[in-house]
Length: 317
Ligand code: NAD
Ligand code: UDP
Ligand code: UDP
Image (tube, rainbow, N blue to C red; front, side, top):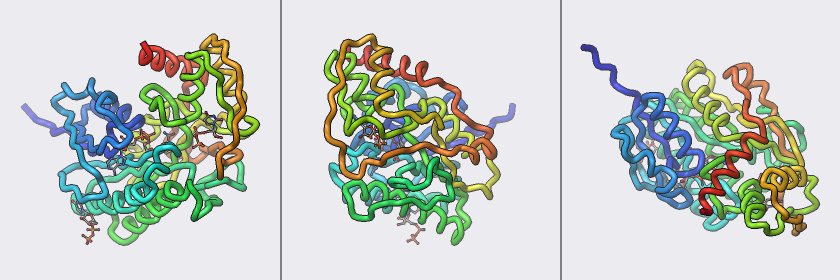
């Protein structure tokens, strides 16, 4: 009988929103998963259903400290992602992106593992180019309240490309755009979770600014598929960066109306001041992902919102 060892995959930030979905998908794909998380924003509840799987291992660890494990692949997702969370301790946010990336890249260098970085559309800042293509360098404020996240992620990209150039580390950098779905945090102030929770409670739906700013929302299953394709299917010489997101752009006002409609809520809309540095518009150009990964999102906003609404309804009960 021949024994084929499973691929061992490290997922940092594995107990978070995207990480929990990714760990589940990797286990379904017959990988052994080592999930590392310091539980800053992630919870055991997100991964409790995976704990019985003998091929799932959970380590409480902060990636700003070195980590020695033997793995074939690394998905580096650890980093608070919502403004409320990343602004809570901005210095730790920078450390997670910078020191955390150095440690994970050091690990990749030592083990020869391929390494994926969850970068972000925020590297484009408040963009002057629309839609955003990967060759746009961005317009980012280096010293504002969002900088700890934006500049931290930009520096992480620099480190990834330098480890590739200097040490031939096999890197896979994806710039993720706004993503939503089950396991989103109820209290992190993200627009999709806020609107759904407010609508389910029949409370006013809070639009910041006049609601004409735009975003493009990708359903989590589509995004995770794109991440795995980048890691698995592309030749080692293709390290990105590649945009992953849904190119369907909409205004925040349209999103509010859609959520109110799908929940059947009687909520009214309440306008509040626009936060500082809030980008005016955002929409990915995903031509590169289509070409290299043969990937584009397939879940409609209605379908994705219905699944997410169902998740929050069950959570409330
Ligand atoms: P999340 O907050 O749910 O997950 C992040 C996870 O990282 C959490 O479980 C948290 O506890 C953990 N973590 C934070 N700092 C850590 C540290 N120092 N050591 C170990 N673990 C740590 O966020 P998410 O939405 O799942 O985002 C995952 C990644 O994807 C992040 O890097 C984020 O920047 C990126 N991203 C997300 C989106 C999105 O729309 N969700 C968009 C762009 C980029
Ligand atoms: N590192 C780690 N796990 C490993 C290998 C390295 O956490 O398996 C850390 C190590 O502590 C170091 C960082 O990764 O601080 C960068 O490693 P690299 O080899 O690039 O740098 P050096 O050790 O030469 O400073
Ligand atoms: N937003 C809003 N009401 C809310 C939460 C957010 O109008 O209750 C707006 C926010 O100002 C931004 C957009 O929705 O213009 C997306 O916000 P989110 O924090 O989800 O993502 P990001 O700004 O990081 O793209």
